[in-house]
Image (cartoon, rainbow, N blue to C red; front, side):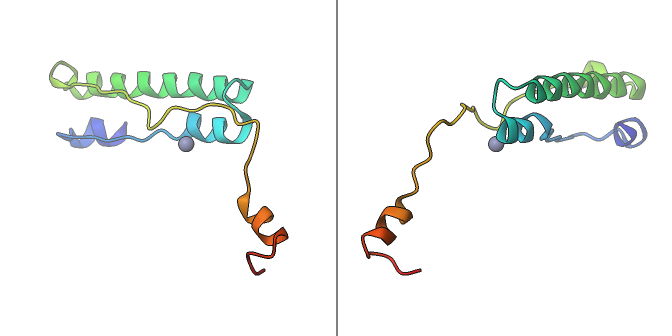
Length: 91
Ligand SMILES: [Zn+2]
């Protein structure tokens, strides 16, 4: 927000990793993920407010995207364990 207000950049790329991080650690439907989503929503609101404060809001295009989709994982396949047990892989 400081940079937007003081430097008025022509391009700003922000990667908010909070939600992705919480989903990886706690699952997609966990309260931690929901709380992270709410924090990200507030951060986006602050970024938009910073452009208003900088006087650049009207000329700013906001693109909000996710870096990937995500599903909870219930099964993990670890083929090296089977290969090692079959004597097909060293330690
Ligand atoms: Zn991820």
